Length: 334
Ligand code: NAD
Image (cartoon, rainbow, N blue to C red):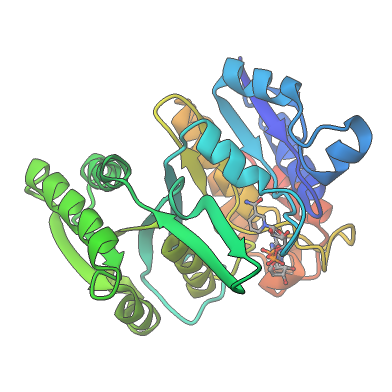
């Protein structure tokens, strides 16, 4: 039995988390959940944004499944997501984007994995405002060590998963110093993995190429902000935010979560698609070595995705979150 920390999160978080835990229970996955929460709701109840009990659970289990957490825009507390990623040095944000039969998209043949640096860049939290001058400075801190770690991780992943090419997306024509750190880090990693092709593209061209000919990409590595934006772009290429998974991985801990946010516009209405969080949970099962359970649930998910009626509205169906989860359960073992 694996003990896993479960963070339901805000907005649609509790609905999609329930769908995933119901599917895992029906599939008899050997997982024991330790439920802990964080964010505004937790603060209102306990006076703590990130309770110590959550940190204790994470440090004990080293693996977590997390729903999205709301971050106030322009004011209020610092993102809980970023705080956890930085506290535990979860420097790899791994976000696969693949076209799937049954999920409508404008494209075919996309199968790429985005490696977003997850602790540095413009998300370092170094923001200043000089009221007297009316000037704000947002510091994008990039370190040699951080660049080496994320670039090496992308190449190591490519080698382990039989992938052929790593593309670095950067802006070294303008951000000459920071961009060059990433280019050099990738070149070092490429020397270590000579059978993997390495190429680099300037971020604006990368966006155009992704929209124009996305099937050319295999593993993509980039800095934090570019990765945040590219991952939503890639989600749009393969069926939307409701279907793409993600993982925050460090050397000693991994937190699995969907790419999407708490979707306040549809929260509590039974409209949320649980596929993204379920796929993140399947990445988690592979991470803890439960490959057979992951494959069995993935097959049931794919069968369900091919039956439009049983899917949620974002996929063209009419089912609620619970009905969709039940359809996946009904397809287990088929
Ligand atoms: P969002 O991803 O929550 O929603 C964008 C759009 O996609 C909305 O129209 C929403 O309804 C739709 N959508 C998202 N997930 C869906 C799903 N599973 N099924 C169906 N439709 C879905 O982005 P946002 O509105 O910009 O952000 C809302 C909040 O989420 C913000 O507070 C933001 O900070 C937070 N957020 C958290 C995380 C995280 O916890 N990792 C990630 C991104 C955003």
